[in-house]
Structures are given as C-alpha cells and as structure tokens.
Length: 585
Image (tube, rainbow, N blue to C red):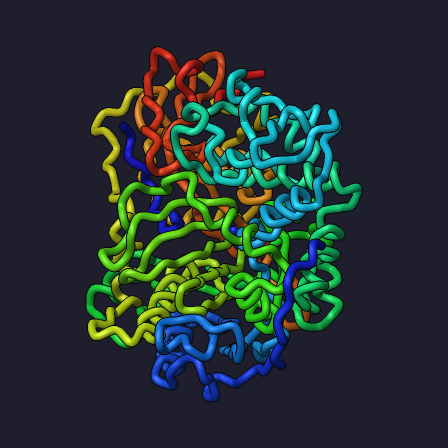
C-alpha cells in the first residue's frame, strides 16, 4: 500500500419537566474561579501563550459537593473562565464571547427528536415517532446504495453513527439538507449496517430534516423554542450573521507553513518555548462559513458563549427543562468507537446519540468534541460528581490537541489525583506519533502515458476538473510548495466545491499510481477588514489510481471508522474497489 508523501497532523462536532430553584449565574475572571485551582488557571494561560493560541473560553458547572465526589440538587456554581483574544481586532475573550461549538450541536438535535417523541408526534402513516422508526417511513427522499440498510436504518442507527456509511464529507459545499439526504444513495458504504461506528455528518443532516418535517418548524426555530429559551441560553444561536452583528462573535484562526518536524523536536525536548518553525504563520479566517450558515445547522451550527455553556452543562447534569429519561437515552451506548482506550487513564469510548461515554480514572464521563475551520470545542461531564465544562478554542491547528490536554488537566484538578500527568506532552506526543514518514519515490518509476488533465464525474461527488499545477495563482502555489513533496513528474490540481476542502493535489508515484493530498485554504483577514493573503493546511493524503476510463480514490478518501478495514488498492479492479470512482468524461 502506498504511504502518503505529505506531512499530516490533522487526524486528527419544549417539553417542560420538573423544576428546581435557579441560582444566579456569575462570570469570573481567570483569577477568581471557585471551581478550578489558581495553579491550573495559570497553566492554561501558559499553554495558550506558549502555542500562540489566540483565545480560550471555558464554561463550568459544579454542584456544591463536587469535591466530595457526589452531586447535590442545589447550590450550583456556574463560571465562565476566559483567556486571550477573541478576534483580529484584539478584543478580549469574555463570558459573552460567541464561539462555534461545531459537532457539540448534535446533542441538541438528538434531544429534539426525543422531545418530539415525548410529545407523541405522529408519522405520516399515523404511527407514533419512536427511536426504532425507520427513516424511509419519514422521508421519501431517503435511500442508500445498500438496499437492506436503506430499508432498515432507524433513528438510533443514524444518531449513533452505525448506518454503514463512512463520513463522505468531501462531496458537499453549500447544499440544502434535502439535497444532502437525496444524494446519500450515491455514496458507497464501507461496511454493513450496525457493524462499525463511523462518524457521519450526513446522519445529522437527515435528523435535522426529520425534525423540520414532523414539527413544521425550521430546526433553529424548534431548538430555540424547546431548548434554548426554556433553559435560558440567551445568546445561543445558529445564525452566524446575527452573531457577528451582536459584536460578540469570535474569529476563527488558522495557520500555514507549520513545520511539524520542528513541533516534534520541541515536544520531545520538553522545552518551555516552541520553535518558530513549528508555530508557522497564524491569521484570522474571520468565520468558517459565509452568510448566516443556517443550511448547515444540523451537523454543527450552534454558536454559544461560555456563560451559556455553563448553563447548558448544568441542565444536562441536573435537568430542569429536559426530561431526565431523555438525558439517559442519549447517554446510552450503542456503538464502540475505537475498541481500545486512547490513554491508560481512560476506558473504551462508546457512542450514544450525539454523545460519547467512557471512564476516566474510574469515573463516568459523558461528552463530545466539535471542529470547524478555525475553531474547536469540547464538552466533558462527570454525572456522578455533578460537574462538567465546555471548552472553546479559536485555533484549528494547535486547538486540536490543546482542548484535549486542557480537559484532562481540569479532570485531574477536580479529582485531586495523586499522579497528575503532563497532559500537554502526553497528548502532543500522541499527535506527532501518528505523522506519516516520508516515502522515497521508486528509483525507476514507470511513466503513465494516459492524459491526466480533464473532467471526471461521480454521481455522489459531482464533477472533478484536473489541471496541471502551473496554472495555479501564486498565493495558492506558495501554500502548496511550503509542504515538502517527493515528485517524479508534473503536479496536478483539482479545485473542489467543498465546505471542508478547497483543492486536491495529485503527484505521480509509479505507473498509474498517484498520491492525492487534500488542501484547505481560506482568505486571511487583517484588523482593517482587508484580505491579506491566504492561509492553508493539508487535511489528508492517500492513493489514487488513474485508468483510461477514470480515477479511483483509495487511502481513506471517504473517511471510514477506525475499526473498519482499509480499502484494498488493486490496479486490476479499480472501479469495483475504489472508495469513490470518478469516471472520465
């Protein structure tokens, strides 16, 4: 199997019940927390400045007996702890600063389906909505390539990520939900129904459409009416334009020219500073999506402040609006995510309905993560202790490992462990350990005489126009050449109309074998709201096989689950075995 040639770091988100007395919310500065130790707060700020991350926002909720390892019904502390800058103008992160929580939005939508059930919502055929309801009985647009899965996938299968479909994120750009659902019939499965956990944003687009069809409201309207407003999440919104006009929306920040070899050296040396080559060039991408972004609400559209994060965590730990039985339903495990613990201190993660569950040092943990260009989020709850928090970071490179490291540092601080871990080094080492090594090209690579340039098409992924790299504009070419390439011939490039990927680069390896590299680029904005060049990063690499008839994509182009076997590169059965097959036009 071909080994990728580009360095890659990215692996690596109303029914009114019983009520309780509500205590006033208080937002504290970074030095006044009653939940976290001052030493930990100093450590978080040190990590932020060391890795030159712009801003971090943490919303926390804790019952009065958290330190005694038991939860109480009253006297909750709610805090917003903030660090650094929110945007390119230098505004400080505050408790009301708005961040994209990305896939942490999915929980709102799993809960919304449950609320519809609690309201005895009826299906088109007159039956009641249940978790076992088949998708085909709700949406006429629904169909999968696998006929059995198409007929049998139910709401639990979608919400727990076990339909048999891999991510297939690359195909869509600005596409309305109904078109996303209609196109799922054109996407190849990587496994059978209910065999493996595979993260899939298309599942939650489908769930969002179901909520709209059965409620008669848009998804944002339904969630606002039945969750945001009753819980008191006053700043939470799906509308990115509205968030910007409030004056509280943060920027997303990205980087380019990050030297991961220098990062690895800095981590291994345990130095207090990071090599400049590792840090690269950071800049604001403004926001990850143009316009209001409402069409992308279902898989990850919620925008929220730390003030509201704290309220939301508290509601999940001690529900006063949501039925407790519904919290239990979404935190019941249905799918094993990875099969092995990530760290010795953790148990195996299982996935429920928009939530993962595992044990940390013997304590039950519920939560999720979220990621969009420029911003990261993480929710962690300890239901037996009555404590939880959400973290938002506006850096999409180092935010990936920092939100995990910070989360575990907080857990160790709350649990007052006797053997604290240097989670910064531990998590960073896990990240760099997965970096692919360089592969030398063959000494005498065979030429591929068939023309590469041209138009290709797949029913699920649409058109792909491949041209030689010499036609690139200078700014994009600069981003590409900053990453080392082992090249035995011309470089080819396709511009993608994808939400997550802007370009795909092809470099020749041997014969009909090529390497593909996915690239994300975005405009860099300065404090005067002027474009100041481009920011770019690689998002994935793999193997492509060109034939006279088309192009087969291998090497996890489709985004399979970690327990699913990889596709087999077979030059004799390219069309049959490819994860995605683009026919030549």
